[in-house]
Image (cartoon, rainbow, N blue to C red; front, side, top):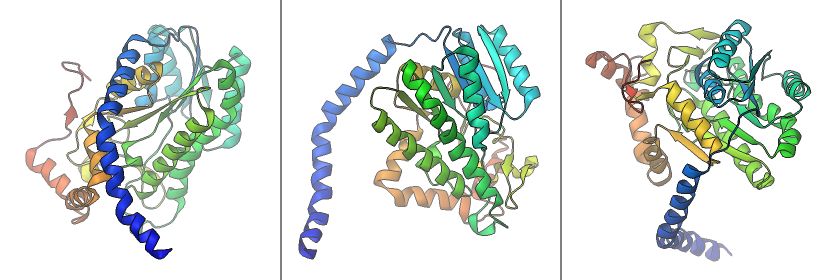
Length: 342
């Protein structure tokens, strides 16, 4: 038996690689056909009910505006009521049929049940669930003073999407609706200083990929996997190593972000909403992050060397921060939208 297992270990990997090489042209052709069909077929969400978590700022705010421009009825959820009301006002001006504000914490299961029930009770249906709420930490695992921040990140990032999905699923099944998930490239790429966040995003990816298999064609699931984009995170808002949510001073903000290009939030939101309307399985923004995914699969040693060099070897003054200081660059934006002012 041991000899058979050893033989399989030696034979199967290269055989599989060879078969994939032969199948690649056919698979590419099928993907291009699906892509072209997606350009022609786009769901009309006018009058449909869209529930968005984490809608008070960042990508959640801009996804609200993208749906508003298409005439949807919106339910926006977050903890900061004053910001939600501002977003609601802007969304109405952009074309939303109606906007309903709910103050809730996605890390609390009872809150998730409440805002799903309130949505269905008010509008009688639910067509799209946008799981967007999230939080990130920035510290090396061994420097953490306690596990409070770790638990907070896991509760918001993972359970904050699982809970709403659990309660929304029966309603989405009836409407043959869709789920849009804001995951992260961190679900695949092991970025330093974010071990628990990366793990939570990886769990999120596996959960929704498995759910997609279980649901079949009943409910569409689009997984948004952005790289670094303009948000409160890039402005220095993290869970610190003592478990407290804090905003880092400007001279410390780029230590873990480094010289990685940052996408505009509006571009990420537009790509995400178009992706779900066109029934895409995945949306990766900026698109060049697919190169990191390929490195992770086929050459993980190279990826690890890059991250160690830029973010690990000198934790107090990482190379990524030195590059920004030497080049006098405060933030590098990925020019997906040419000529747009933000």
